[in-house]
Amino acid sequence: MKPEQFIREFGPNTFRISMSFVNTAKYLVVHEGEIDFTDEIKPHHGDRVFERDVVKRLVESVELINLFGSIKIAKDKVKMADFNGFLLVSVPIENGLADVYIHKVEQAIRDHESIYGGGDE
Image 1: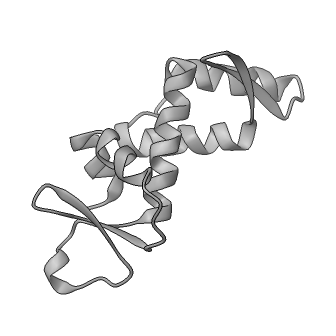
Image 2: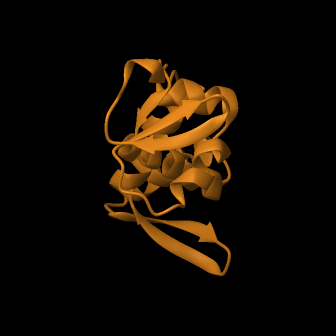
Image 3: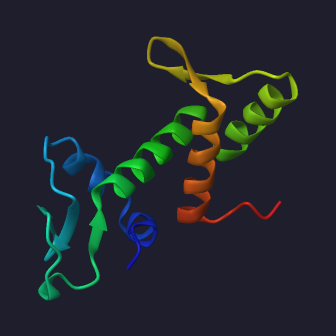
């Protein structure tokens, strides 16, 4: 199973909480409803072993798109910023706005589409 499929089926919160723990293990293993960390993949782990860095990026991408309000808004902001020659786009946060590099938003869009589909337009 790919991490995108797992996030699509169980939601990013499943990983978001575990990613907040300080841990340097290379992999996350989902087994019997629990998430564990390991540096070594073993046969009994099955197909629910995910690279920590990939999962972290995917979860952060979903969060970034959610800050925009929708993937369409994120795409429109990137398109407008690119048209105007800007390197950054503004995204609403709790206390105002934050600037994010376009390439990071573009990666978030690709990740979001790999999880939830889209990109057909």
